Image (tube, rainbow, N blue to C red):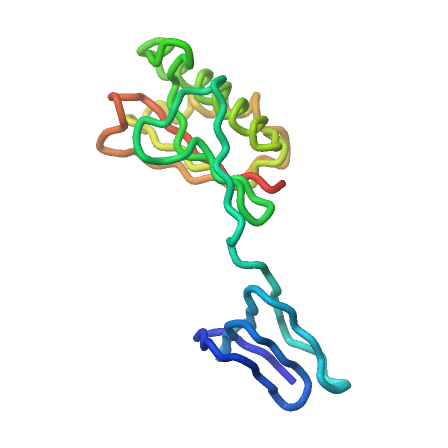
Length: 185
């Protein structure tokens, strides 16, 4: 029996070929099958292996992470959200937590402060730099890429997280850099 994902169907119970039952949404089609939420069980023995299957819980438990050791959120969002053994850190600026002002106008100083602030948020969420799996860097000027890389490399040991970097039209408070990340807990 092979399972493949393409579309999600909400059904109360599924008995596919007498081998698998689920009381959660089922994805069927071409790719991999994905069952979110409840349990999977076999209703009878089958010698045919699953081609690909993923079981995960829904993001039912979501917890806001907040620390005074990093700048407060500038709008209606959390510094970070903890859900499903992952920590999602919102974009961080190079602000000094106590004053809410930039450490300086230079991209090097702002990058250093961004990463320090991020470290405090990671710690408050039960993570560290080594548990970061993905970062996204937004730069006001892509010409600062090399300067940022030199500082960034000091915080993330090998293997470094997956990363995307973009030049953006503008950042909050006219920042030079903003970084967000995802960490595995």
